Image (cartoon, rainbow, N blue to C red; front, side, top):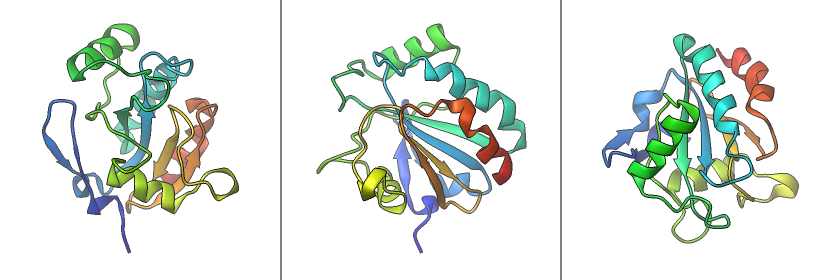
Length: 159
């Protein structure tokens, strides 16, 4: 059975992160963008991270420019924007595609594990979120309109 441990991703600093290192941690994996109507969710994601990081929770943010070109910057520009505007302290990954032929294998797997409405595997917009348990399984998928604070109860159950 495939789990998140079977994947490796690039960080925004260009280093490889073996996600098997994250087993034992509850993860919220999110495709993000700096120029999106949902960008203020960075505040809520940071609040979740600060609230639960000491209990084994982490947010992994994957910038994505596939939706309306809302993440045009390079890795340094994205990191600076997130730090200055939202004080982000959780890890930013390298920019990815989440749909199509060049989609990140991690996102392809998560979409297959937890399809969206009516079985749709495609991600519809920025700030789609996937909750991963300590064993590396996708537990739940949340849409872009789901505010981070609404995920807190699900995170607490997994911690």
